[in-house]
Image (cartoon, rainbow, N blue to C red; front, top):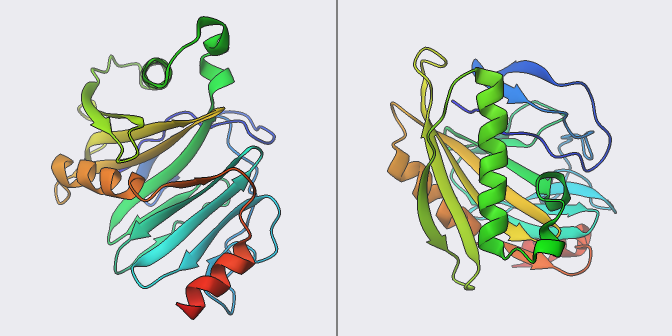
Length: 237
């Protein structure tokens, strides 16, 4: 169902490898060290830690979960809405099953794929295009197949540029996944990526809409997010 693009190196790295997750081909570049194990807590924070200074957490809400990211210079929340949401049991990668749709959340450093972005004064649209080309080339090298990315124009309600793109899974690579769908936005000095797959039961239109609806909930903070305070606020409301 889900083909991973290259993993970011925000913490430490491990050798590249191929991993099978829930009977899905999962292509993994050097993965993140797990910043938070998935430990259920007796509060609205269902995954992560109330007292975390760096890492991620998932807070239960009436509509699903609120994903909270606090790593290095990037701090944001993202709402995953659905009736049944749960993480996949992989301590090194962030995957959620949302009403049967597997979704990954990934962050990549701009310096990793466009180290000269500042010198060239690349705008967000150019950065997103560079990231898309970088990811596509990486996956082509792993699969040994040429991929043709189909690109859609997208813009957030805030006016920020977004990149919505997809490609067909090569024939014979994965019987269940038909297309891989990606949505990326810039939050300097990183790119935030959401990814899901179109299958026999999930159309590409549904996958694209889900990613667009999800990224519309993105809220970026200039400072680390107080997970405990946010959790208490959600409980009260």
